[in-house]
Image (cartoon, rainbow, N blue to C red; front, top):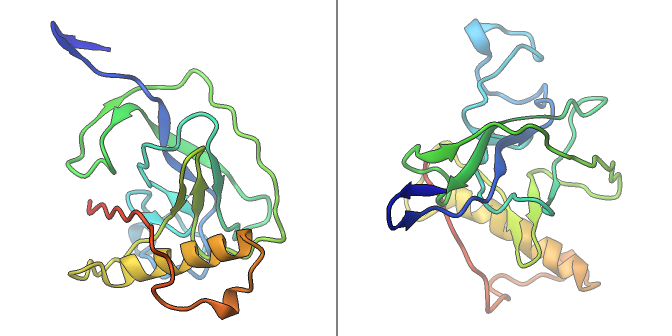
Length: 178
């Protein structure tokens, strides 16, 4: 996309929001203060069901694994972007609308996930979110790192119980704070 003479922005469309139905046990506040477990919740934050992750690697050909909490999954998407930096941290992206998006839902009962995991041609992305935003990463860093270790260990045919802390020597960590 030509922004102005001499400035071209490469377009890499992806859904900023991709999710399944919310976990009825999720403690997040319900719209209008409702107390029913299936009352609407805000889609602003990313969470265990996916939601507003704004991960710019989720382009065509990406695989995302999301824990399913409700019968039928209730898949939905929105907040389409054509270009964006890492995590829409400053709330800026090149917004667009998709004429169509192709999804291929596959139920994987063999996977026991608590948070979404994304696989691209080059990366495994373990998603996590810490509402308390602790300095130094805190839980936001710990949960995804443990999930990534378990996933990579299993992928190599190992027993995740045998994992030792600090075992991985090459791991790229990226933390976005909205």
